[in-house]
Amino acid sequence: MSLLRDLADLVLPGSCAGCGAEREPLRDGACAACVAEVEGLRPYAASPESPPPGMPRCVAAGAYEGAVRGMLLAYKERGRHGLARPLGAVLAAAVAEVAPDRSRPLLIVPVPSTAAAQRERLGDHMARLATRTVRRLRAAGWDAAVARPLRAAPRPDSASLDASARRVAAESSLRIRPTRIGVPTRRTTMRSTLVVVDDIVTTGATLAAVTARLEEANMQVAGAAVVAATRLRRALPHPSPARPARTGVWTSRHAGGSANEG
Image (cartoon, rainbow, N blue to C red; front, side):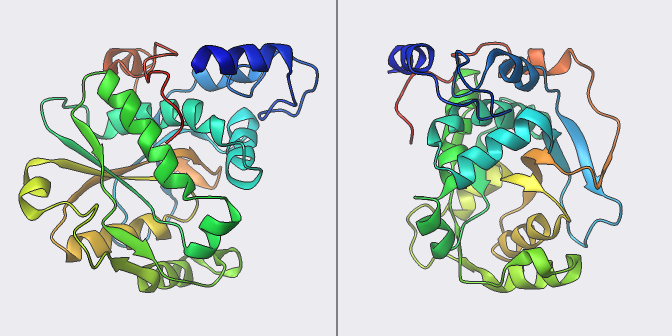
């Protein structure tokens, strides 16, 4: 399946998801320059200038600009779901910085989407991305799994809200799932490292709200990992360039396997 995708990109290339260039050979939906830009990312700790109360430690794969921004927008808003593959790879590298200990089981909890957002985007984009992330982590030696203990009720558009209002809206919309399907047991969470994942961190309000709701249900959050952080974030000292290679999730393009998109 991976080979067929690669051949289709070469023979019938569309526009690059990263920069919009046309008539260029593509790999995973992006041109060679954008692929190089994304593969060159190094995870770093990111936080708002004034982080909201309860926001966990957060690691971003890169800044919300350039090829990463273009690929995220194409993935979320234009239905280019195949981009979950390269985006899942960079998110896996960020998760590995939050939870580098491969001897402990790892639970990845995606920030849930509302039903309206799922309809608009033809599915839960973060659940799909988390699945790709777990595949990459498993291939690199982590005992990783996706857990979906939360659902999101309808809430107002956060674009017009400040950080405080965003957190209130996010926290009030989050619900622990009423069934045990996809909900980790207390025993599982006690022996696992739990990492919340999202696509972008802006004010940090959503990550703080998700963390609070999980901890109310006795699920302790080790940290959060995101694909991108906006330039409004304060970048803290980030790991040396060599460290992502040691995690084993960064160096091999095909480490995540060639299974169909989840």
